[in-house]
Every structure is written in structure tokens, then in C-alpha cells.
Amino acid sequence: MSKKKLLISNHIEQKELPEQIQLLQQELEEIQDKTRNFEALLRSRLSDLIVESQELFILYKQNKKAKKAARLEQKKRGKNYKEPQGLRPIPKKKENIIPLEEQKEKKRLYREAILHVHPDKFFKNEKQTDIATELTRKLIEIYKTGSLETLQAYHAHIFKGNTPIILNDTALKIKIFSKNDYWQQEKEKLKKAIDLARNNQLYKVITEYEEPLVFVDELKRYYEDRIFKLKKRTRKGL
Picture 1 (cartoon, rainbow, N blue to C red):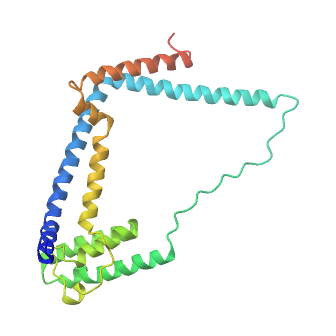
Picture 2 (picture 1 turned 60 degrees about the vertical axis):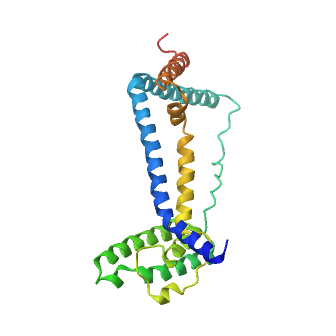
Picture 3 (picture 1 turned 30 degrees about the vertical axis):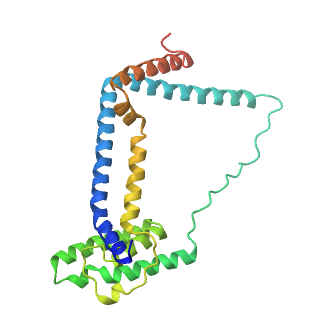
């Protein structure tokens, strides 16, 4: 493939990416909606069993805690009992410290991008102002909570001209440090989210069972067995 054809192909792909992302987003929402609706149906059919199971489990935990406290009190009354000396130090979790160089690079990319898309620059054009406002909001969000890689990708996304905003020539000459395009990253994130949603147990029941409502009977048997065992452990109802 010639260089010119490759450039045209890449340009077409870049234009199509937002549409692909929209379709992926719709697919994800459909999967999540189906899963939520089925879960709501299960809860409505099994609510009494679920509640009883939870109540018995809490009672079981309380009884277990009370028995542990009683054993400790009995132990304290023994002749050889010694009070523990102090508390065991709990090791502190290591904080996720961002290296200084990475912080500086994030700050540089953030400032560089926000100076060129700040809404105040487009006050004469309402449409451009709205676009710039959304870009600025996203930049701030990524700068505060995202990784350096995500910020690099969004920086590249802006300066490669992938947004409807009109940038000046100076802005377009700024060096791009990211190898990955923002849209491509968003597409990959959605693909992963869809894979996770598809692997949800309830969604598998919806798509793989010939009659998904059979799963209600399976869950009913599970909760009845759980309740029976919990009643034995709490000496209740037998």
C-alpha cells in the first residue's frame, strides 16, 4: 500500500472511530440493561429467601462473635493467663506515589492543552465555546484522576485535529508524545467492559440457557439449602 493510500485509510479510520465507539457504548448499555432487568426479576421472585438468608447469616456472625468473646473471658479466668502487652503494629499500605518526573510531564501536557482549548479563546463563537468547555472539563478530569498515558492520548487526540474545535497553526505544530490515539484507547476500554459484561453470570444465563427462568429454581434450591444450614448453625427453627 502506498504512503498516500495509507494516510487516507488512517484518516477514514479516525473519522469512523467515534461512530464505532458509539455503537460499542450502545452494545454495553444493552447488555447491562438486560442483566439489571433479569437481576430485578430474580430479586422479586426470591426476595423472601434472600432476606431470610441474610438475617440468618448476620445472626450466625453475631453468635460466632459472642462465642469468641465468651471463650476469651473463660481464658482470662485461668491461672496462667497473661494480658497481651500492647497491640501488634499493623503494617501501613504503601501509598501509590506518582514519580516527580511523571507529575511534571502530566502538568506540562495539561497546561499545554488547556491553553489552546480554553473556552475564553472562543467567546465569539458559541458552538466552539461549548466544544472547548467540554474539552476543558475532560482535560481537568484526566489530569486529576487519570494516568499519564491517558493524558498523553487525550493531548494527542486534541492536537491531531480529531475534535471539531478550530486550532491555530501554532497549536498544530506542537510535538505529539503519545503513540496511541485517544479514540483508540476509548474503543479498547469499551471492548474490555463489554467482555466483562458478557462474562457476568446472569448475562450468561440469559444468553446460554434455553429457558433463563429455570435459573430461578436453581437459586431457590441454593437459598433453601443455605437457610437450612444457617438454621442448624444458629440452632433456630429446628
